[in-house]
Amino acid sequence: MFISKSKYVAGCQCPKILWMDQHMPDQFDESVMNTAILTTGNEVGDLAMRYFGRFVEVPYERGAYADMARMTEELLAAGEPTICEATFMKDGCFCMVDILRAGADGVDLIEVKSSTHAKDYHLTDIAFQLWLVERCGLRVKSASLMHLNPEYVREGELDLKQLFTLEDVTDVARARAQEVPRTVQELTRLCEQPTEPDLPLGPQCSSPFECGYRPWCWRDVPQPNVHQIGRLRAARAWELHEAGIVSFADAAAAIQAGALDLNPRQVDQVMAEVHQLDDVVRAEETRAFLDTLAYPLYYLDFETLMPAVPPYDGMRPYQQLPTQYSLHWQDAPGAVPQHAEFLAEPGLDPRRAIAERLCADIPSDACVVAYNMAFEKARLRELAERFPDLREHLMAIHDNMADLMVPFARGSYYSRAMQGSCSIKHVLPALFPDDPELDYATLKGVQNGGQAMDAYAALADCGPEEAARVREQLLRYCELDTFAMVKIVDKLRHAAAP
Ligand code: SF4
Image: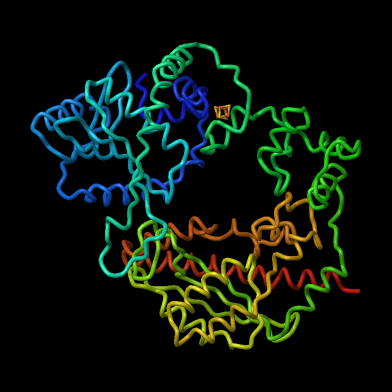
C-alpha cells in the first residue's frame, strides 16, 4: 500500500480508516463525499498555479506516480524555478506538491487550500510533504500554506496577489515532520493486520472530516443517541458517551437522577422520545409570536451560490450570491396564497435584477416572514449596500421581517419527529407527516439547498431543453420553501387557537 498525503491525513484522523480502505472498502458511505468541494478545490488550485507567474506542471496520470516523480527530477535538473504537482516517491510513500519553488540552495513548498484560513490538518498534510521531499534528498527552505484571503474584495480583474494569502508554516511543519516516520510505520503495520482493528469510537469519527465508515463502525450504537441531542456540543456528547450515557433512555435516567443537566429544549427532546409523547404546544407563547405578524403577510426565501473565487465586483471569497427567490403572500389569515418567483439567467451578475424585482414584488411597508431570517436579512443588506438607489426600499423589507423559526427554536411548539432540530427540513415533515404536497422527497431533481446550488451552477453549460427542465426543478424547490411557511403559520394558528 502506498501512503499518499491524503491517506496520511486520513490515518492521523483515525488509523482504522486506512485499514477499512484496504480490507473493507465496500462499507464506505459515498454520501459523505462532497463533489462541490472537490470542484472548488480544482478551480482554486488552477488559479494558484499562476500566482508566481510562469510555471510548468507535471501532468497527472493515475497510477503512473513513478513516471511523474521521474519527470519532476528532470524538471529540477533542468533548473525549472516553479513546478506544480511536483511528485516525490520513496519507501512506499508519495506526494504531489501543489507548488514547488526551486533554487540553488533548496526548495520552497507551497500547499494550496481553498479555505479562507489554515486548519490544523493542513499542517499535518504539509509536514508529510516536507518529510518526504527531504527523504528524496532535497533541502526544504520553507513550507507555506496558500489559502484564500477573506478580506479580498474584487474590483475589475482578479488580483491573484490579493486573492491569496501565503502563510509561512515552516517551523510547525518541521516540528510535525519528526512524527511522520513513526506514524507511517504504525499505519503500515496496522494495515497489514488481517483482523479489524479494535479502536474506540470518538470525536475522530466526524472531525476534521465526517468518516464514510460510520455506518459500519457505529452499527451497534443505539438510535437515537446523545450525539443527536439538539445543540449539544460534540465534546459534551462524547463525555456522556464515555461515561456510559449513550441512548436517550440512559440520558432520561441520568436527568431524573439529577446527574445530567440539559437545557429545557433538550430535556423536551429526550423525554418526548423516551415516553413517546404527543406534540407540545405552548399556546400562549405561540399566539404571542403570531400576533407579531401583520397582513398582507409575505413569505420570502432566497437561494444562493457561494463561489470561492468572487465572480463579480464588490464580492469577497465565499460571499453568498443570491440567484433566486420565491415569494408567497396572503391578504388575511387562511386566505389562498399568491405566488411570485425570480430565477436569474446563469452567467450574468444577478444582483441588480433580483434587487429590482424584490422592490417591485414586496411593498416597502409589508410584514415579511422568513425561516431563519438572519440569512435573508444579510442578503438584503448586501443588496442595499450595493445599490444605494434601492437602499431605502430594501432596508424597509429588511426591517419588517419576522422569523418563523422562533416558535420552534424557543420550544413553543415541539414534536419528537423534529428530532431536536428547528430547521424547516425537520419541522415541516413533523407537522405534516403524510402530505405529499409538502414533501421535499416528491420533488424532481432538486430536493435540498446543496442540490439547488449544484443545479444552478451547472445551468450555464446545459442545452436549452435541459436548462428548461433544471430551471423548472429549481423554481419548484424554492416555491416549496415559501409554501411550507404558509402552511406552518396556518398550522400554528390552529394549534394555538384558544
Ligand atoms: S467511523 Fe470512527 S472508528 Fe470507524 S473508521 Fe471512521 S473514524 Fe475510525
